[in-house]
Length: 478
Image 1: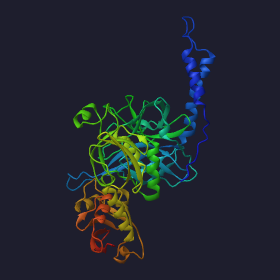
Image 2: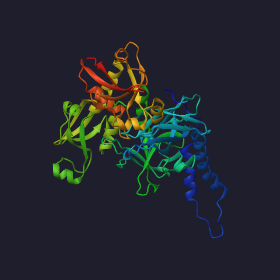
Image 3: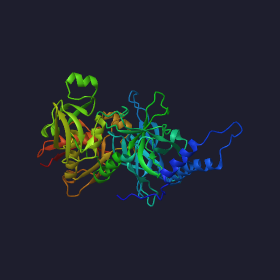
């Protein structure tokens, strides 16, 4: 996918810095001199002009994301009418044909997603895919010739660089804030997923609820991060904002567009930070803490010769001192790629090539998707509005044992010559179970189908308006 380029001129940051330093080095005003000189004002105005230029160019690419989720209170008998839960966040247009980057947590469990552009046009958005491990989501709206952001390179950021955030905090409308890069590779334990990858850009640019999914920009107007979280006990900004590096987001976006899911390499190691206490406890041959301690190995790492107790020093030539740095480097690789690792083992330095594998959960997802395609089926999770149109009401869902947070899957396409068509499946059929196990989500359907025995038939439980539940037997290809 070709990304458009904003025509933002290089404002010569080195000259700007020199001028700003000149202001700082000028003698302070005497008692009778309270006003800044014209030269001082012009120097400071350069920075204001840079901020204004970034906002003028980037603001049209930033969108407001509204979500709605309808909940059924299952404790009530009979079940109540759905109650609506609303949410909002931000996103950034990354292509003229309507692809939008945002956060996974912004659209998580949403039944409907609407996007409001800078020019106030409103579009329904569909979810192309997301990855909760880095908290990224890719949306798509049906529109053309849209303004789109330039994606920069987060690996070029340095602590102290100016950055700006644009988003829709607290539903107040498009807002610009500024600050500096306060830290890199920050791990803050704000993502809930077990294998989450946290390598955040930390900034003191003001970020509040509603900023999530909006861009973090450098002075050239390039997106260097996706604003993701604030670490605060109050829920509001206290000087600690976190953004996902755009390099990670870009890798996820490419996979989501090409395959509908993120394809990640898997090294197969558990890691700990190295501390003085760990050096003493494990008798490591280190004068001071450095590298990453490998506490267990499996799969690719085991086959590649890594062992428990090794100290990982470099991955692909890059020094590593924290587990999240290793995770970030591996995230950009694919299963089957070879990575070169450098490690310390009982005083000896070793360099080993390791062929990456794929996590078991990701393998199940890929296999399930492949088997559904082989059956001639395309599916998606059933949304509230579509469920109402098909007659699959909250009462029907409750009668079939579905909890309010569970989502059956609806058939969106049936290949005429496929196995599913020959067994009578139709578009708009709702898949509620496979071999007596409930289909509670698209991920669960893929897992169930991946676990079926090749060459044997499986029972697919189908709900259809005016017919209720039916059972179809589908043979799984070897």
